[in-house]
Image 1 (spheres, helix red, strand yellow):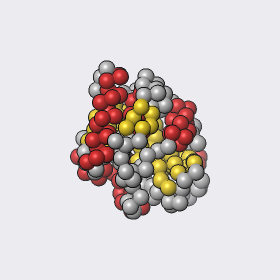
Image 2 (cartoon, one colour):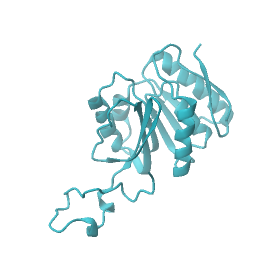
Image 3 (cartoon, rainbow, N blue to C red):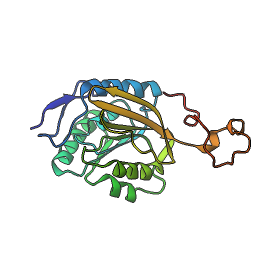
Image 4 (tube, rainbow, N blue to C red):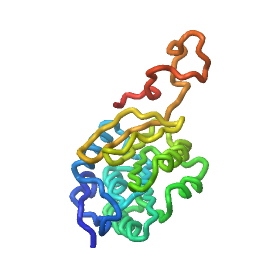
Length: 222
């Protein structure tokens, strides 16, 4: 049996969760989780959200979202042991909520996104990929994900503090970065070129030219 962590707040606050046994995954610490969800609460992005937890591990981030009022949560995990822990934790939170809010998919991130319905759109997405995943692989997943984000969505990428910043695809723009000990979090949102005013485009610049120092579309975050 894996180590025990807990749901921090919401309908199931204080409820113990099972972690994945061994060193296969690196679970988000309670300290980082508290800081992360405090920030997400400030963005008012959780209540009623459609949440996707890629590379879910034990599913702790997705389950925490469910406890805090997310409408639906999908946990994506390819490893058999980790997926089984995800299911155990999903069953626990679904029992507390009295509805099937959390669903587990035993598959890899790439094929999951490849099979996603054309109109599938998530409001909040967590990506905590394993260390062996190369930056090019993460960038490819982010590019696929960008096509399935709702307006105003938030994407959170968690990596080692020594990892380089992810390569963001054209559909995403990073608006914040936070470091907590050995963990670094990047926050990104959909980029909407139409949100840039014509007044922001230098004289002679084409519609597709980059605007220096342009921030994310209408973002009040950061």
